[in-house]
Length: 324
Ligand code: TXA
Ligand code: MG
Image (cartoon, rainbow, N blue to C red; front, side, top):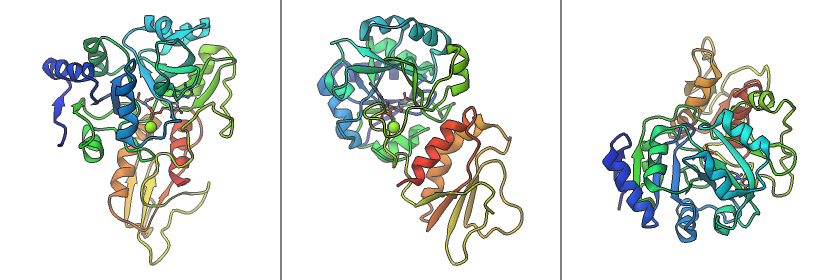
């Protein structure tokens, strides 16, 4: 059965969703980053359903969403002052803090780790849902494992419509890339670049925030190289490489700020940010990738951006898309 899609601004829809979550069911809901596939974070069986619906490996932990900063002390222990400082500055918003967990959080949610990722989302519908449900929600991005993340309710319905119990439609996600993940177990470490730029975190921390090494054991499990991959093979253009499709092949271009001048030979072109803003590029990234992927082309090429501000997260997602 296909899940109904309800308007997230309707209080009745939120009440229905909260009821389903209390019954251990799955509800896809909007956040400012991407859509999440939610289940009760304190119900191991419900959380296990998320893994089943996504085809997600059990070693990949889920982010736990909370309605209130006070949940830090319920779900995490040994919370360092720096966690409160970052939460005060960036919550609600696209920042996930990895902290030591309390026994309240089931093993299945954290993939057996001694830590938990916590985030207080900014989207009003996500907050309304968390309040109506009255507890924390485990929610990964609402896409099949390894595919591009969803930034609209239609994206969720197209791929997981048969596997969730309800989809809340809160419009296109404003940020467009997932939350930034920072580990505060030990020295602060950037596990995943995302919606809060690294520079803003470094400013708040008053120190450099090193990026976790990709091969570091268990520091960002599930951060597989082939994440976010479209079905069509994607290649990242080298710096300064001419934007031109090889003759005889149907190639799509994901351009950053403008289409190439003249006849470049591409079968389709998506321009991410005609206004020159990286925030626009982030917002439109996954939807543009999906549109190009739907054309059944031979190959996709993507233009790289500078690894500054939101550019770090965009580049990270493009590299992972290209790694499949
Ligand atoms: O913006 C977001 O973060 C979205 C929305 C829905 O909130 N969620 C999201 O979840 O991107 P997901 O499952 O696609 O990515 C979660 C990633 C995991 O793959 C893992 O790398 C990291 O978060 N993670 C979660 N808990 C962790 C932990 N305890 N330690 C280290 N990494 C963790
Ligand atoms: Mg994901």
